[in-house]
Amino acid sequence: MNTVDIIIKKRSGAELSETEISYLIEKYVGGEIPDYQMSAFLMAVYFRGMTEKETLTLTNEMIKSGDTLDLGAIGGIKADKHSTGGVGDKTSLVLCPMLAAAGIKIAKMSGRGLGHTGGTIDKLESFPGLTTNIDGERFIKQANEIGFVIAGQTARLVPADKKLYALRDVTGTVDILPLIVSSIMSKKLASGADIIILDVKTGSGAFMKSEDESFELARQMVALGRNAGRKTAAVISDMDEPLGFAVGNALEVKEAIDVLNGKNAGNLRELCLTLGSCTLLEAGLAESEANARETLEKCIDNGSALKKLADFVRAQGGDERAVYDTSLLPDAPYKIDVKSPHKGYVKALDAETVGRACIVLGGGRETKDSKIDLSVGIVLKKKIGDYVSENETLATIHAQDMAKAHEAEKMLLECYAFLDTTPQKKPFIKGIIR
Ligand code: URA
Image 1: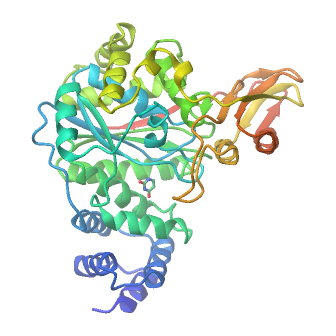
Image 2: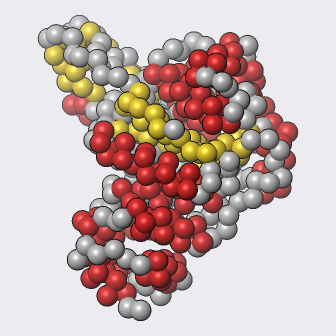
Image 3: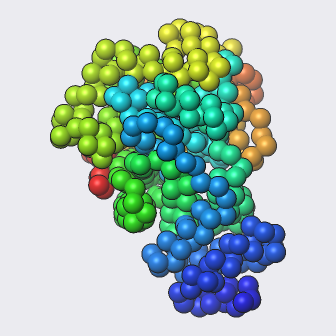
């Protein structure tokens, strides 16, 4: 078999065989196919796509490139959740403790933020002392004892995705459906949970900008998960503007804690209740969506979800007092209000630009090795549909450095657009695939 022939075959739009895809992945991970040939192949996929059969084969070959997790030693129903990535996305910090309080076992691997989207591992490190470097034995023990554990992804879990994702990131081949499906589903299937819940974002701050593409992404991932014998569901939600109000690691942790305290009833709570209800329905622990929501709301109201978060933070070496007293989380010294130059209704609030402003402040990374500041970020005061008077505060910037704060302020002023009349409200939850 010859790599150039496979590239040319894909370039001409033909369907690749299992043997050809298997050859490519095995030789690429083994270092026998160089990056420049794999880049050409990825670009051919970008323009020609892949059939669902090819995507399934690619996913399976990626799984075979490394270890798979065996969660058999954890009692009960194990669920995992994955987000396709967004701005202000602190969903796992609310959803996981809520589900653990409702009796589901969460044994999950998460990633760090890259580009304009954040990552759960960085957010969790806002708790002083907390580690996500959890070995296999401790991982299983904590899942059994507390019902909730999150570890950083090990190098041995789908190494093909690590290599391919890094290459996609620098060759303009991230936002293409078969590569996203295989990247996400290879990691989820290798992680061994019984239930996989997919949080698919759509809009300006998401990888998939159009609703049609996002629904197709969700449909293919659910089909692939079910094909592999896992209970899989997807919720498609809006990412035209950031999720919730806070963007930046410690600020997002504070907002998640507010939701777990029952203090914040916005879109973040709605998304977590929707994802959580899907999980309980897939687990057979609720008879109806209404019944599932009632169970989850009870876990917030009686404080058991918040207590799960505290138990989790303590078990992973963090200072659990910060769950009850958020002033113990990292806090930036400068708080600058961004004032509106116009009056009117907020028509748009570009999520990707807000994410980029957070990177400028030091709260996100451009490359895998960048150091980040957990204390900085942005708290939005006005979101789409809100009325704002001239000179009213649109957002508050939390910064360590005034020059960076002014740069972020300029970007934030550019990402707001205004209208004289109330914009039409679009639904936040676009659809559910179960
Ligand atoms: N998240 C992933 O894990 N992989 C992708 O390709 C895109 C988002």
